[in-house]
Image (cartoon, rainbow, N blue to C red; front, side, top):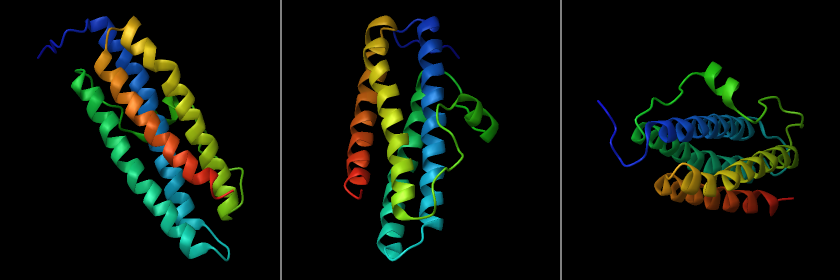
Amino acid sequence: MNTEIGISEANRNAVALELSKLLADEFLLYTKTRNAHWNVEGPDFHSMHLFFEAQYTQLAEVVDSVAERIRTLGHYAPATLAEFLRLTHLTEKSNQDNTSAGFTKELLADHEGIIIFIRQNINVFATKYEDAGTSDFITGLMEQHEKLAWMLRAHL
């Protein structure tokens, strides 16, 4: 069935591709945050275990919303680990130790990378691709990542 929402097929294709990259980044960050939750060690284990759980819970909702936005545009969301690893801007390899500071620094860098990627696409989606809805959508995601990054930064 055709998706007739006032955005050309070419523009929907372009936006869906960028959203697929964002979905891959979001899924990888979600997974890395779960890793921090499971594997953090140190005297602050309990509080950081709960802190990382709160973050990955919020990221799970973000992952779902990005996939649903891709579907709204008439495309299928990537949904395999292989696709996510091919599309992501992030790395799954951890270069930190299992301390709260190590995980926090790495997760913060990933959030900041996603914020920059989103910020670069807000006006592109609205003007070049004539998709104000997705532009607004990712603006909201950027604000969520800014808050999550602030919370991580506060632990350093």
